[in-house]
Image 1: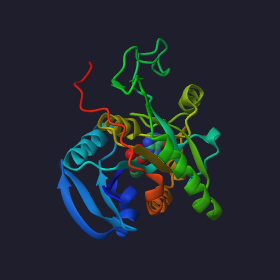
Image 2: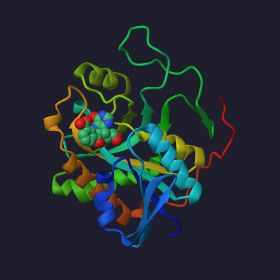
Image 3: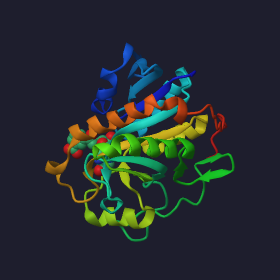
Image 4: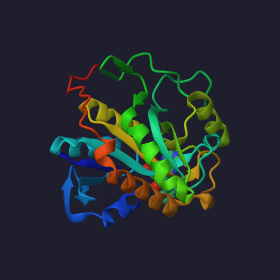
Amino acid sequence: MGGHILVVGAVSGELAGLAEGLESRTRSEIGGRVLLAGHLAGVPIRLIITGPGMANAVQAVTAAVERARPRAIVLTGCAGAFRPSGLEIGDIGVASGEIDAALGLEPETPGDLPEELPFPVMRCGGLEITGRYPVDTEMSGHAVAVLRHRLGRQGMGVRQGPFVTVSAITTTDRRAAALHARFSPCMEAMEGAGVAHVALHYGIPFLEIRAASNFAGKRDRSAWNLPLAFERCALAVRTLIREMPRICGSRNKRCGNRPPIL
Ligand SMILES: O=C(O)c1cccc(C(=O)CC[C@H]2O[C@@H](n3cnc4c(=O)[nH]cnc43)[C@H](O)[C@@H]2O)c1
C-alpha cells in the first residue's frame, strides 16, 4: 500500500496514544508544527499537532500536504457530544459531513445562528460549498462498520452523523438546542470544517473520528473527561489504521489548486 496517512490533532494529548505506538519514529518540524512520522501496523503514518481552532488546523495541514501528499487525512481528537445523538462521554463519533457553523450571514435576532452564506467559498466537482463539507462517504461508512464491530463489543458507542465546527465553544443548552435543531449534529469541535476544506481543495479523502470529552451545552468543566477522550480517539484511529488497506482505497477526488473564487 503506497502513500502515508496524515493524522491530525489539535493538541498533543489527542495524538499521544498514537505517537507512543509509532514504529521507527522520526520527529521534524513543518510550517512551525511538530510532525512525527513512522509506521503503525506496517502503514506509513504522519502525525501533526496543529494547535486548537480552524486557523491553526488549516495552516498546519496545508503545510504538511504541500510537503508530502498523503493518501488520506484523518482528523481526530476530543469533542462535545450532542445529547440527542445518544453519545455518552468516551463514545466515538464518525463524521458524515462537516458544517462550519460560524460561516454565513449575521442573523436578524442577536444570538441566533448565522443564515446560510449566499455565495460559495469553494466549488468542487459540481459542488458549491457554502458551509457544509462532504467527507469521504465510503471511508466513513467502512470506519463506522469496523469501529462498531471492534469497539462496540467493548461497550463503546459508535455513532455516525454531521459534525459542527465552532469558533466559540458552546456553553449554553439554548445554543446546543439551536445547533441541533438546524444541523442534527452528533458532535461539535473546532477544526473539522477547516481540515475538510483543505482536503477537498487538494482532492484528498478525508475522515474525522472523535471521542466525546463532554456534552455540548451548559458548561460544566468538572464533567469533562479529556483523558478518556484522548485514550479513546487514539484507540479508534489505531483500530482503523490496522484495517486501512480495506478502508482507504486509491481514490483521489482532486479539485486542483484552482484560483480562489472570491
Ligand atoms: O475548556 C477548557 O477548560 C479546556 C481545558 C483543557 C483543554 C481544552 C481543550 O482542549 C478543548 C478544545 C479542543 O477540544 C475540542 N473540543 C472538545 N470539546 C469541545 C466542545 O464542546 N466544543 C468545541 N470544541 C471542543 C476542540 O476541537 C478543541 O481543539 C479545554
